[in-house]
Amino acid sequence: MSGTILVVAEAGDGGVRPISLELVTAARKVGDLAGCTVTALLMGFGVGGAAEQLGSTCIERLLVADDPALDQLPTEVLAAVLAKAITELNPIAVLVPSTTAGIEYAPRVAARLDLPIASDCIDLSFEDGAVIAVRPVLGGRVQSAVRLSGGGPVVLTIRQGSFENAAIGLGETAAESFSVGSVDTRLKITGISAKERGDVGLDTAETIVGGGRGLKEATNFALVEQLAAALGGAVAATRAVTDAGWRPHHEQIGQTGRVVSPRLYIAVGISGAAQHVTGLQGADTIVAINRDPDAPIFKIASFGIVGDLFELVPAILAELKATA
Amino acid sequence: MPYSIVVLIKQVPDMNTVRVDRASGKPMLSGQLAISSYDDYAIEEALRIKEAHGGEITVISAGAASVKDAVARALAMGADRGIIVAVDNINELDTRQVAGILAEQIRRVNPDIVLAGQNSDDYSTGQVGPQVAELLGIPSLGSIASIAAHGPTLTILRDTEDGRQTIEVQTPVMLMAQAGLNEPRYPSLKGIMAAKKKPVDAVADPVATASGRVSWGEPFVPERGVTGILLQDVPTADAAKQLVAWMRERKLV
Image (cartoon, rainbow over all chains, first blue to last red; front, side, top):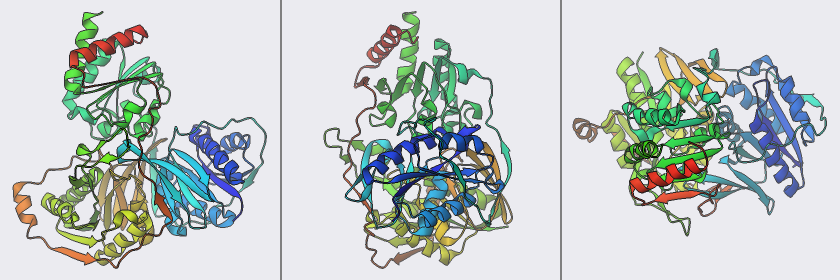
């Protein structure tokens, strides 16, 4: 096997998506332990800006597949290009971001090339010639280490927020063009609508109160609204809640929603799934109320209360009023 | 057009009854089992498609003998037939092996649509759905907000970091379901009775040996990422007082 770790990068918002820089850090960690280099593969359309940023990190080699066929990141084309790259480079390990695209094509590529795969990894190491990944199980209540072996490349998808972003501006690794070839696609992307902005409340709000499925019904969101109003803050929700139609789409915080940076985020009836927590990266302080003591949200909350939100929220409102 | 639909379901520990022993990191499973949460949304979506267009729903589950209860529940919700693949050591197999077992059964049915939960409650790898699709040679889609069927063409709304995509795909196709796709129904008493008469095929899989390429260590409780306060078993009024005082001290409210 050639001694390289292959990192798959994505572009977004004109530059490289931050999760790609986390993957460079992860690859560097494993690469240093395993004695190998880091190669990045950037796939997309019109990704020159992202390529420059990636090329300025500590990676040793940069492959760029910049092609109209990759516009809007169709997962079939991404899978085909990645499979080609793995076959040509024969890396020790392949790191894929846990983006909405990555979680779809990574398992397919692993099955196509018959490679072992571990997904949603939050830490990596290298021991006795094998990659070890740590990943959450049972809804994040516990974690387990997984050892991937078999002699060939191993595939890992990495959860956002697990590693520090690699520094950019360190140097210039020239981009090598990687050809897409012709790919049969059966998925036709016929439209794309940008995320609803709604009012800009969530982007600038100092305080946000978010509600999740623990509220049980749409009408119970009144509790979240009352708490937000009492704190002069904005209302937000999880994807399950907005997809179910309880709240408008633009209130969704998470991987496919908004990323916010309030001083205070209060999570009411939210379990803390990675998809939602990704949107909270910028929050200074997180407070959580949930009836499940093992809910992952408590791992990132500075103040957590295990209990019944239907009793706690009214009690908090009363206390706020009494001590105003 | 009527659709032949396969729904893949997984029986997992009931997450409402799972607790963790803090000291050892061992999950304390009550023994209660359930259909993995997202699979319920897959079953419901299949029922809606059938109700709108006609067709037949086959639910497939692989695992220990107890999965017959998961299949029975899906039949009680309205699925038409079941296939159970007996694999006692299913948790020792890697996802590609599980995908291979499921794909073999799906080929027998030759459906237009395969629906599955995007991740399972227990291991949540999200790998089996896409791997089954890869082995069957059909496209797969996740992060789905809605599904509309027009004959052999399905129109899918899919959410990404960059916005919402509208995607057209021809059957056969694998579609992954998450919470929010629909509101799963509860089985009615009538449905539970009717389920007893629906055909269920029990297939014994040839003994599958674990590939050994993916080996799992013992679970452990992760450390809290932040130092802070966690109130448990504190009376409501006290907890509220403590929280408000804490927030005021830090000028957060």
